Image (tube, rainbow, N blue to C red; front, top):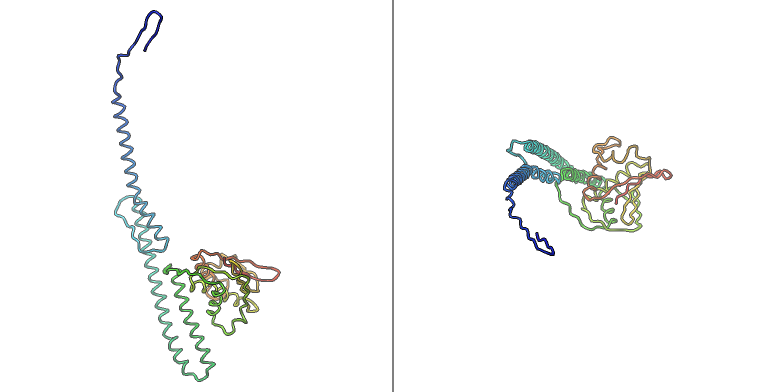
Length: 292
């Protein structure tokens, strides 16, 4: 410190040197080291949880060929082992179901083939053609069951390609396998458009909607309206007694049949990230199902 005065100048210097804070540094180092060790321990402890999360994501995408069993002795390992057990049980159930369905479909193919052979022996061409159409319909139903099995088990790859909606409608009407379909299905194309869909699956959607429209209408008529970005399948009849979401459940007992039609439709549309809406026009007594 320098002190200036008229008569003198005084310079003061502190000779006391500060002590090195060794104690504080040691304490800080120990605490910091403990925090680092605790952080590493927590990260290593949570690593199995992150791996289990990735396994669950893989499982949610339909891949059942995963293993997440653990030899550890903590709570995360218990959860992982229970999840691994559940995955194995689901995999075995799906495999047994697939084997059962495939065995049934295989057994049904044999009498159908025999029936077609016997129908060839019929001299009446009209009866022969009618029997042929019946057996073709049965074959088509078996193929549809195979598609349903693939959809519900997520055991398929989508083949998305651009198609005109009018072409998809024509293909779905052909799947109905009825004589003179123009008597039952009326088309109105306001503005055609293209969609990226799997041809077989999407035509199955339209076929089910058209088939239901014809089946559950008093006049046996279905109306198809194609507008830009939306297709509507409509019929005349009473309003649905239940909310639309109820019909998305498999084996819904509200209508005749197995109650799988709209369940299949919803499953396929979900895969394509499309939506099915429903409205009822009171004045016209008209049901409308819209896909966009």
